[in-house]
Length: 162
Image 1 (cartoon, rainbow, N blue to C red):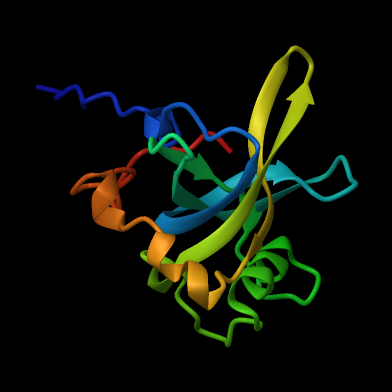
Image 2: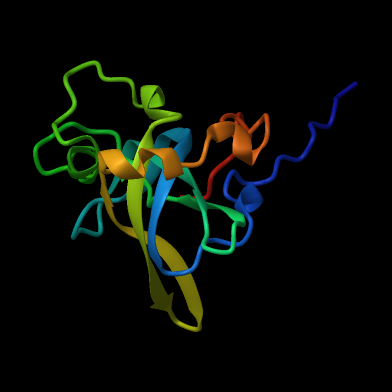
């Protein structure tokens, strides 16, 4: 007899309403990886199989509400021209060393600028820039626990629509 598995919601489905455009201090809540994804190569019609990652951040808005926001998906690569490397250099101030585990960034603070991009008739919130948090703003960074006990792993096993 076959067992029908529980339907899993996409990993980004539980993020809720994103923060409005602006600059926020944030905390990394999760890192969501997806392996063996087929996608088009950069500026080409050919496809390739890649491993992708996204970072999920939590922010506290001016009205005190807690919001979540995901980065764009990035190929897991430390090549000098990779989007992931540029993202991590902007955030951490240095290039990751070989063997660096992105999961070690869960709970780390960041300063993010949220921008709104429009595709067709839909508007999306994206991370426009990311950087280290200035020392004097560190006390304002929300805690992972502020987003619920499962905030750092609420995407475990979920499929993410890259």
